[in-house]
Image (tube, rainbow, N blue to C red; front, side, top):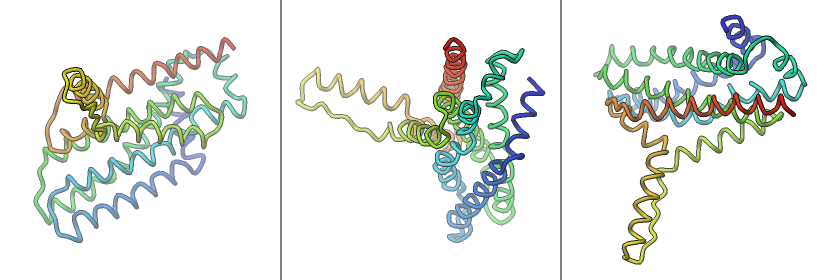
Length: 243
């Protein structure tokens, strides 16, 4: 596991992807920090974190799109299938490598937090919960991205599909179904659909972290989504072995 993880992590920086990702991430985060806090002289850092989460949806596919697609296109995935390592090990190593690159960029944003702490008011609990929420959300995004990368040999298709799924899960809470009619069945269906969309909404789940609160159900939700997509990614690799 350790050797495979190191190989996957190094691969991000043998190519330009790791450098491009970190550069774009830090530039955009710096822009958000200036616009959200420095320019209006606001000490509330929650807007900064909310903007980062929105941006992460767009940039995470950059980390995951090549994970399996590139190997599948170059037919080097055969080496994975014949190597003396379990598919679970391969998937987890790729997941941890992508998450490490994400966390590296996130750690560098502590500079912005330090600046705000020196020259403004800072709620440390809000900072901690937002960083935790961002990490958990990114882990779920990466899990989704890895699975979709394993489904196609096109990096662009994998990136586009990942973005679409993530965006859909983000906006779920904004669907306000109304089956109307004022009857019992209509009200029941409206309540059921509203509950389902709210339960699976990434934006609603993150809102508690943004406010500086820890909710075990939200933590469990993100971990469950991450684990579920990593599991079906392993199953996808198993299926391709049998073809």
